[in-house]
Length: 328
Ligand SMILES: Cc1cc2nc3c(=O)[nH]c(=O)nc-3n(C[C@H](O)[C@H](O)[C@H](O)COP(=O)(O)OP(=O)(O)OC[C@H]3O[C@@H](n4cnc5c(N)ncnc54)[C@H](O)[C@@H]3O)c2cc1C
Ligand code: SF4
Image (cartoon, rainbow, N blue to C red; front, side, top):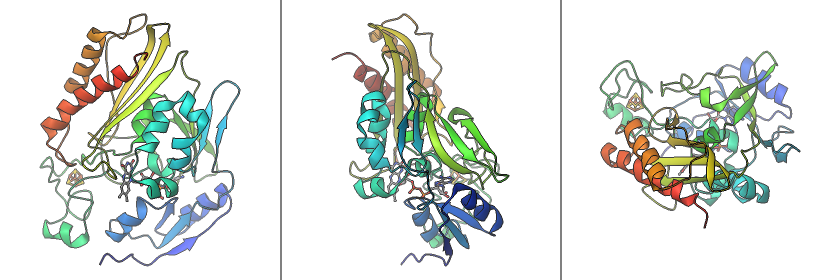
C-alpha cells in the first residue's frame, strides 16, 4: 500500500496569505487539485510538512475575456471548465482540445490549469514507489546521483508532460505570479522552463511564487489552432508526444505559424521553420514543417515508447495537426 506522509493543510482565503504561508512555513508546498501532487506524495517524491491549499483562495478561478480579445484564465480554473467553455472552444480551439485530452474526466474536474502548467516533469525512473527507486539506487532527480536515462551525474532530462503547455506556448501565453515579497509579475511562458528536469530547478521561478492566472494575448486574424496527442492508453495517460499548432490566416494564406512539441524534453520545444507569411498551407509547407519537427526533437527513453518511434511520431503528428488547420 502507498501511504501518504503526514502533513498539515492550511486553507488561506487570499493570494497574499497563501504566499505568506508558503514562504514562512518550513517544508511547505501549494496544492490546487492535487491530481499531480498527491500521487507524488504517495510515492514519497516530496515530504512536505505543510500543504497550502488554493481551493478557497478568492479570485483565482474563472475565465475572463477582455474587449481586445485577451483571455485570462484564473489559476484554479478546472481543466473541465477550460475544455468545455464556449468562448475558449470558439476562440482557442487548440487549448480547449488539449485540456479535454488531459488524464480522465475525474482528473479534469479536480485538476486546474495552474497545476497543469506547473506539473512536475516525469520519468520512468522517477515516478515510481520508493522501494522501486531504491532497488535501482534512485536517480539524480530523487535520492540518487546518477541519471539512468542519459548516463550522467550532471543532467536530468525528465519530460515536461503537460498537455496544455505546448498549446499555451504556441499561443504566446504568459503567467501572472505573486512573489514572496508581495509583488506581482507577468512572465512569458516560453521562457519559464530550464533544460534541467529536476524539481524546482526546472523553472525560472522562486518555489514560493504563486501562479494566479494564465493570460493569452489576442490571437492573429483568422486564428486556427489544434493539439494532437499520442498516449499508450487512450482513456487516461500522459503524452508520449504532444504537438500544438497555432496559425493566423489571411484568406487562404498564412500570416503566422507556431508549432510546439511537448513530452520530449524538460521544456516544450518550439520549432524553427521557414517564414510562412503570405504562403498557402500547401503540401510542400506541411512537409517542410513536419521535417523540421523530426530534425529538431531529441526524445530520450524517459517516457514510454521507443525514442526513434516517438521522433517519427513528432513528424507524423505535426503533419496531421497542420492538415487539421486546412479549411473543411
Ligand atoms: C492517472 C493520471 C493521469 C494523468 N494524465 C495527465 C495527462 O494526460 N496530461 C497532463 O497534462 N496531466 C496529467 N496528469 C496530471 C494532472 O492530473 C494534471 O496535470 C493536472 O492539471 C494537475 O493540476 P492540479 O490542480 O491537480 O495540480 P496539483 O497536483 O495540485 O499541483 C501540481 C504542482 O503544481 C503546484 N501548483 C499547483 N497550482 C499552483 C499555483 N497556482 N501556483 C504555484 N504552484 C502551483 C503544486 O505545488 C504541485 O507542485 C495525470 C495525473 C494522473 C494521476
Ligand atoms: S531523466 Fe534521469 S535524473 Fe531525470 S528523473 Fe529520469 S533517470 Fe532521474
